[in-house]
Amino acid sequence: MALAQTGMVRDRIVAANPGLETEIVVVSTVADRILDRPLSEIGGKGLFTKELEQALFADAIDVAVHSMKDVETWLPDGLAITCILERDDPRDAFLTAGTATGFADLPAGSRVGTSSLRRGAQVLMHRPDLRIVPLRGNANTRMRKLEAGECDATLLALAGLQRLGMENVARCVLSVEEMLPAVAQGALGIECRAGDDDIRALLAPIACAATTTALKAERGLLAELDGSCRTPIAALAQLDGDRIRLDGLLFLPDGSQHWAVHREGTVTDAEAIGRDAGAELKRAAGDVYFAHLK
Ligand SMILES: NCc1[nH]cc(CCC(=O)O)c1CC(=O)O
Image (cartoon, rainbow, N blue to C red):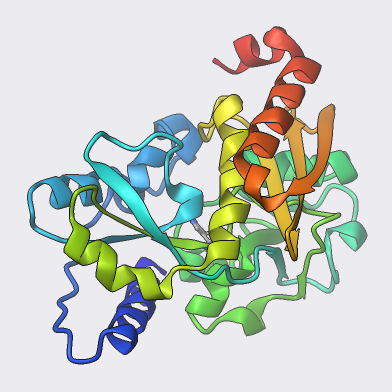
C-alpha cells in the first residue's frame, strides 16, 4: 500500500510540476518488518515513520509520503507535514469469506480478525457476542488468512484497498455510525525538512485545504488524549462550507464502555474544536481510564 500511494503522490507532484525529475526511494519501517504482533504492543505509530524521518534528516530523501493515520501527533524538531492531500473515503470495509453482509449479521461467536484496538472495541460495542482475534500483515496476507479460516471476518480501510485496486474484495463499506474511522484515516500527507522552501513550493499546488482543516480538528482531539496506538480512539470531522462537525469516540478496549463527543463550529476554529472535544472525552473517561492503559 505504501508503494502504491507513494507512486500516486509522485504522479500528482509531477502533474503539478511538469518536467520535474523524481526518484522513489523505498525505506522499510519497523511496522513492515514485525508482522506477528499488534502495533499497540510493539510501541505505536512512530513505527511507520521513524526510518523515513531519519532518511529526511540524512538528506537521503526530500519528501516522505505517509498515511496521516500513522503519523504521530508530535513530529521531531526540524520536520513538518507541509502538504495534506485531498482525503479518500475514510470508511472501513468489511471482508468475510462467509455470507454475512456486515458485522451486524455475523453468527454469534464469529471471530473478527483485527489488531486495531479501535476496530476491535467498536465491533464489541455493537456485538459483544463476537470474538476479536489478532490479524496483521498487508491486505493480501490478511485476505489469505481470512480464506484459510484464521478468522471469519475482518475490517480494512477502504482507502487502502482502493489504492491497491482491491476494493472489490470488500463485502460492504461500513457506515461511520457503525464504525467511526481512525483519526486521519484515508488522508495522505507529505513530510519534509521544515526549512526546505523549494520542496514546499513544489507541493503547495496539490495540498487540500478542507482535508487539512478536518485533520486539524481530528489530530487536535487526539493530542488531548494519549495519542498512541494503545488508546482506542475514533474521530471524524466533516466540512460543509465554513462549518465543521466533529465526532469522537473513546472506548475501553473490550468495548464494554464508550464515551462520545460531538462538536460543531467554524473551520477557522478547527484545532480548538478538536482540542476541546478531546478534553471533554478525557474528563468524561477520567484519569482511571488513562492510568489503566499505561
Ligand atoms: N495501520 C496501517 C494503515 N495505515 C493507513 C491505512 C489505510 C489507508 C489510509 O488510512 O490512508 C492502513 C491500513 C488499514 O488500516 O487498513
